Length: 177
Length: 68
Image (cartoon, rainbow over all chains, first blue to last red; front, side, top):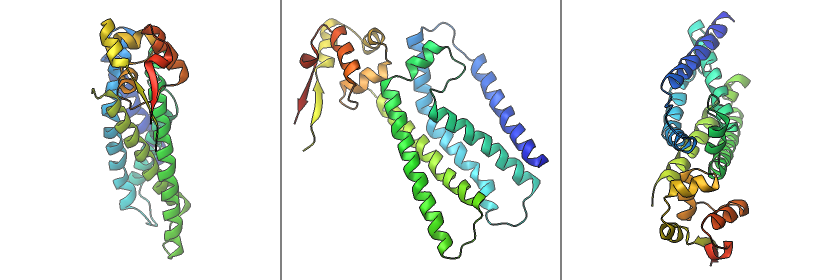
């Protein structure tokens, strides 16, 4: 249990560091429209990178898949992964940029962004369901998976699918032409 | 066959000498949204279509039309 708490603590600490960096690097001299454009552009570039980071965290889980004994290090990594998953899901489900002024957040989440976000959520849902069906089918062939492993696999497929789709749509929207 | 919403947003915007960013600011969206509407990538809501038409001094049906 302590290892899980440690992992969550590390995940939250990483989040706080990211927030601090974002705040320190904040550009003060931009208008609301310029700032929204800048942040929207940055998000479009960050989404695929976030998907890669998320997937790379799965190495710890996949290397331990089906194992009876779970080490403290594994528990810590899985907890940190859980924190990251919750933060990403919250970003997908809300306007994101929680530390920015409301005017900037409202503008970033304009009509096109909402449409792109909804489409990404739809992809995430479809990929999650496909993963759930695959996991279910696997168990028919006597593959032993715990409920926790199954949920982890579904999230491993669903969340990056939504991130990649959103990133693709945002980058396409920013492209001139 | 799928119908698409065509527009003369870019033509009219250029006529009036607006940049995408300036038009976006007038209607309260990001430049990205104006860009996607211009390129036909994104179909705007009725609300946004009316706002865009107003900002460009046209009626909605002069700015947007359906192409088979």
